[in-house]
Length: 536
Ligand code: GLN
Image (cartoon, rainbow, N blue to C red; front, side, top):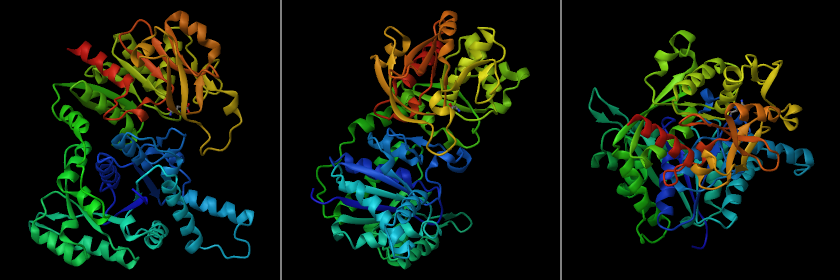
């Protein structure tokens, strides 16, 4: 294929329509036809990246291989397409302005007034084209965060309008995702909000080529015709997107609605070969027909918003499907785990996962839950802060160091079993300054970790500041908590295991970021295998 094709996806009427899933599903369908696809997310907020926002603001912060702290939609892109994304796949208003202002200070625009148009829009266009020009892709799909009409997204919309004139008509496509609400009182689907959203897009100079309509009822022909007429779109390009039970079904739904054919036709590309979705269907079939249910408790601080632990939930789903099991995931706030009700709260669970996190709140409660799992031989998986809490629990209750702690929570502890390394001691800047991204890890031959991975050299993604304090390595090892994974260059601890326990593993890294439906992560697969074996 000669030129790179750029597909822009905007949203209208309301947020949370699932643009990320639609972008990932379209990407999947194009990839399944043999095209090389990547997806870029443009986020209109002024933060330089998602790393400084708490999950209540923005859901999970997803970490790429190259250490970018990004929007959780990048997780969907990686999981659906089985690709790795990078810094270049997530562009924010903050990043764009930062670049432009830095250039201005260096004198790049000497003599000029620096303005939103053309300087900010030029920088946006530059970051979009940079991804396509690398020569690695046939398609770059660009998802624009927020909804049309938001003040923040205006420069992005304007940049897309300009891009339209840089590209041949067959290399540019604009898709608009919208909501067709159903009014129960009159038993009708309503198109007016969509008409307004599309008018707003048109006023900004963009004519959508495809309209994807989220709806809880099928769209009758009359509604399609109305949308076609008022939105200036052919009826075939009105695509119905009914609500369905799992996000992983959306690529098949979009295939059924001929989204991929509509896109290919408008971009003057052949409709053959048909997409090969065989392996995806195998996964989906296992996902939709579970033989057993496993009840896993995820203990964390942000349990009120399901998106806070998105990648962990998806990783459990992938591993569950692998085992023909569905996961009954109990999101348990640390707040409910008080001393007098710990057994009552945790007894119904078949396994516990301690979530990553930051700060002081919830640490003691997580430690209590870990003690319960260790003593009752319940499978326990600790991720990042979860591993750190497992180390503290062991120090206090097995080694007898009652005041053991992480210096993140107790800077004065006499037993700093988790602490800052020298490289983190003097860091004052909060953004982008943690240990981030993919790093290698050496596993101990013969350990449970090496057996699970089937190799002794792995690499996993990181997002943390504090580390296991290696001065206590021997004490832990002698008492039964063994370190079975370390960073080869620095000796930093990556994995701890309990020798005398059916399944008790803590990882300083985040395995959840690398799990995909077609490649479920070995640690999650092994964790659920243990649960399955113990329960049945
Ligand atoms: N707060 C811990 C640290 O910074 C753990 C971080 C995490 O769980 N992602 O080391």
